[in-house]
Image 1: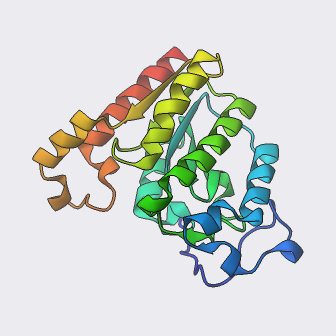
Image 2 (image 1 turned 60 degrees about the horizontal axis):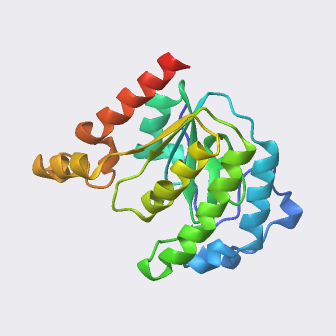
Amino acid sequence: MSRKVANKAIRQGGQSLIPRADWCELKEIQGRDPDVLGSPTMERAFQAVLKLHRPTHPIALCSLCTTTRPYSAGKKWKALRQMFGGACDLIVTSNGGVIPLPFETQFPYLNYDAHGEAEFDAAYIAKLGARMDTFFRRHRYRYVMFMYRHNLRNARIAERLGPALKRDGVIEDFALLPTAAQYKQSQAERFHLSGYKMFPELYPTMLRPVLEQVKTWRKAA
């Protein structure tokens, strides 16, 4: 299924989460991390996701957002959907919240925009971490794959959240991949010269362990 790339400057999307009459002005959901993290509209959309989402697989695969909207119109999420869509619930995580891929075409997810900046990492980790914790305690999965490179701020969330969910019996197991060693090996193989500079997670040395772990979990499930 092909998707047309959305123009973020035009308010658009479905109304499953927020009716059109209540759509905010774009200035509320575009800017810097604090603008999006603190947006009432983004919070309303997240609460609607919590209410409407229904797990379809025992495995959830979380990964970082991309600038292209809808996400699966871009290279990364299109590839993830093709490789894992039949085995995992795909979930975008970003300053915009926790976004299961079926909601990717709903307002405000086609429009929000804020590039991550290190000065706001603490606020980002606190807000997204709390939302992810709420999401996974509301919607139960047996396994969670956190597909984040070790040097991303999202990995710092997963390092705390995964063990807490497992300890509390919310999930059976989790994985945070690729590892630092796998990333280092990919650097040695010069992945950035092979067309993977923008989306390193798709490089075979980093992708293969994810595929193998998901395969193991599917057999167990």
